[in-house]
Image (cartoon, rainbow, N blue to C red; front, side, top):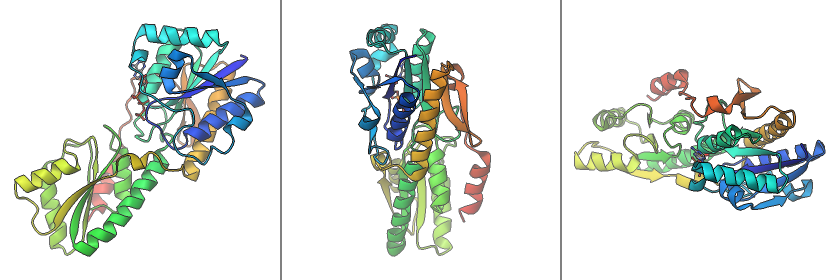
Length: 323
Ligand code: ATP
């Protein structure tokens, strides 16, 4: 292999830049020409490629987002889209591609692999819903941002004797909510994995009030059967939750754009560098992730169908410790 390219796709995640830098510099150290593909699969289809040398990826390790840009590209869901992308890659002499992204992006990588193009994935999404890595790139930063917000909100909730329902990201996966809720000492956590019954939640918060706590923090995952505002509305309409005043706060994209933590810089570096090594060594059609502390490769055909359930220990702990 002489030419290796890298792209970022799907939702941006803090640490993507560290991974891009590691792919480029590892490729260069192994004597390859390295390329960046701009705007994810859209850029792949349009041939939006640029040569990247070691200096082009200087001073990006500390930056959130992705210097290559990202995109959602419906055209890549079609066979013609994937074929066109492969023609573009061949046209530029590129013989291997590292795809940094989450579930959808790795499904796209699998489509390229099935058509015979050498590809390796890097597990990257703040949602942590990707099979093949215990923890994905961006999760640590997103968690720390959520945690800071929860700490601050708890102060103001205590001052005003309020219940605050804090909505965190994570799509249909409750990992961020569960971990931020435990680490933030939330009184209750609402997850997509377990349907919430608003009456029971109100009772639980009421109980917290009666026990004299000055605040109740409820961490709500965005993909739960009721979101934070939905729960507040339900409480109002059904005249539940007496005692505390209550409000909802949606953290939203602030969780995605932060500068990467040390853990995410190291993870991006490790996964990006290993992805380049794997593709050069001929181990293609795999996702590079971390399983029980070790860099591991998992075939993309397993990644695209695999499910990663929440750790039952943390689920039990969340319930036991929120008193
Ligand atoms: P995150 O969950 O962090 O947002 P993601 O990688 O799951 O990241 P998606 O928007 O689901 O984000 O996917 C990114 C892109 O991957 C899509 O816009 C599309 O171009 C490509 N993709 C998704 N699903 C498929 C598929 N089934 N076949 C081919 N390409 C796909």
